[in-house]
Image (tube, rainbow, N blue to C red; front, top):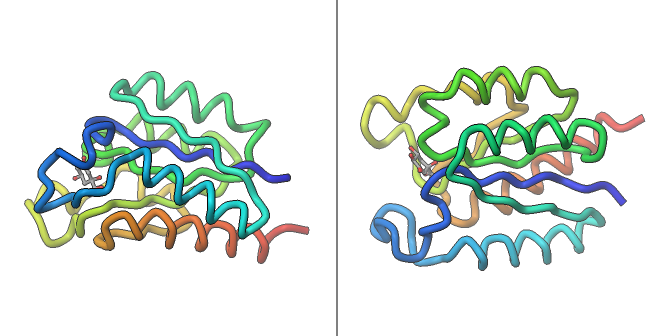
Length: 148
Ligand code: DQA
């Protein structure tokens, strides 16, 4: 069965209590649980990790290149700062989908720029926790269209 790497970046471990007006009340554990349920419906598995460290996110991407079918990621603030994560996505042969809980285009100007979006198949932004399920569906749809 295909496995999708799900990567959550810095501060997303605090979901549920962090700026709930912006990010909502859903915890990261609840997001991962619902992704696992949806993955089972879609006939895939998800492998979910959160890190506050850019290097660990890079290492996870590199390690996934031979074992996983795709990547669903929310790199948090690293989205707007990390050339290295964009390069890593371009260095591995896996399709990736970028997601954000908030609508990054309706917030501060610096959030409108992503170093990683151009390395992704597409971006889902602004639907709260639903951004993740929409992103997973989109990624699986992409894989099914392009597989063999
Ligand atoms: C975020 C948006 C980023 O700008 C922010 O730094 C985050 C969360 C989102 O999911 O809306 O940490 O990626």
